[in-house]
Length: 256
Image 1 (cartoon, rainbow, N blue to C red):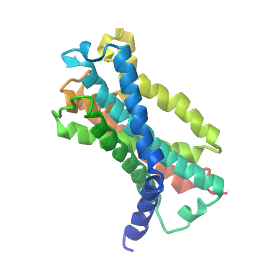
Image 2: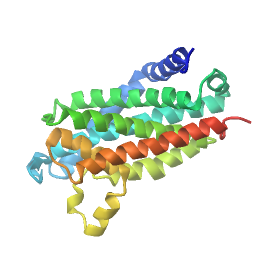
Image 3: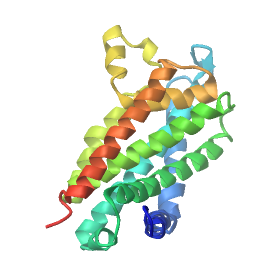
Image 4: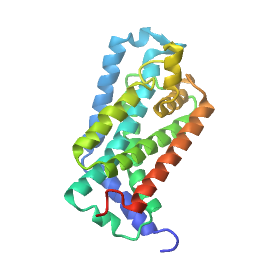
């Protein structure tokens, strides 16, 4: 097989992709409906097209944030549920027995989750173009932050799935970590409207950078440093990757 188990890696990746395509109504169609409901509710409640965020209409400001939030949440859901279900059903051994290195396990599982996030993002963005003018200004930032956001939450999902011992633990991570970080990241507002102390706290939230950079690609508007966003996303993913490989290498909560 050489230095990398390419056949096994491709098989693992395909398994992760096919598991969410099998139930596309739940994994692809449902996020579209949920995100469009968010768009409708917040646009009506906060002023719709009549409100401006800087020189950007509110609807055009809101839409990219909702897209990247859908990407992130679904990437997390895919990897965390995949590992948790395997542990509960006792077939996690089928993943651990093949000759994979810790990096290969991380790559196959995380990339499968990231693929779901990207698929959801594309479908949601296409649905939103019916209601919002989502012009593209910087393709590079859209592709970079879309992929890095999906990978980051996929790695977080991998960590959460390994750490959790039951589905209640996954729900706790979602409710007390993922959702608060998403809602406090500037998805529905510009952090420039916050008090200075709150802006400093917002800049400590990695979710802020994934949303700010992704939104900049569509609107040419950024609340923070674009260079800092590029670096933070890469650094956070590197740290999460290291944690995931460490968990697989040691068999943390995976091996008796």
